[in-house]
Length: 400
Ligand code: FAD
Ligand code: PHB
Image (cartoon, protein in one colour):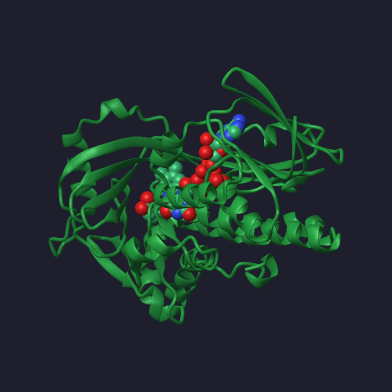
């Protein structure tokens, strides 16, 4: 048996960021992750960091490689009817931008930072469970290397993603779940090809949505809409490129550069919120509490804003015994979460073709895109949400 102040379940962006924020405030934590270190680092997921997430990583002292290798984008393109329309994110938001830097790079930097602190981080923990959540000593149990472990905590942070154990350990009826499934998913590839556009291109095409993104000056990241349960084996590399080129090529001849496909997978799309994001001494953060469809590029950024709010509350509790910020945690997070939910839902339903759409829906989508790309007010609205709405609290209040 061991003890800690904050037990953190999950070493994804939410868990690792929280661990480091607590460390910077002198608060002890143990991170328990059920996967292997290489698996956690190699998993290909998010790519777009909001301005506020970049600022947070810099303020935490873990942004050195991000600043060197991240690709700052001052704009993006919306493409429909065979034409790309530029949205000047930075011009429309007083200089804010997004940065393309893979989630796996963020996680790698945070694992390195954690190891440098010598605070505990357990990978490959089996049979992880949490208990005594409504007591003052909640516990984490797990098995590692054939030995059972128990950690007694003051608080537990459930940062274990959508399929984790923490949310599932909350008694039935304590949370309200808001759920919406979409009748499509994304087939995504990583390809060894230099990006043919310096900025992202979101495409609405008669055959469905497609997205051009990147990871580095030599790696392109591309997606297109498929049915949610599409078997990836059904798609040869050649068929994937044919579909990408068909959807993305614009009348001026722009198209992605073709290269060797090094990774491919299908992701279903969902919007989900569990409220409140707390039960007793268990606090949920990131994908454990909410999921957005990736079209708005918001998931990782919401994980970052959640843990900033949680770090502020835990710092105040340990420094002055106040618990009002712990009590407000869920409400403060959910304000930002719901705005990101609305934006992600809007981006998704505006840019995808739905199997049950009517001819009216199709015309309305085209009008929506025509209005968006022709109105400075509409572009400003997209831009301020895409670069990230303000975090609800200041960095200073979380000890930065
Ligand atoms: P996770 O990253 O899921 O981390 C949870 C961790 O908990 C994992 O390491 C997991 O192994 C571990 N875990 C699970 N169960 C247990 C258990 N029982 N015990 C211990 N550990 C456990 N977001 C963006 O902001 N921008 C984007 O551009 C973007 N693009 C995306 C593209 C795709 C294709 C996908 C799928 C997602 C994208 N996202 C994007 C979303 C983003 O990847 C997630 O929101 C983000 O990973 C959430 O971080 P998290 O730490 O909350 O959860
Ligand atoms: C990515 O680069 O993986 C990416 C970019 C934008 C999104 C989603 C994913 O909206």
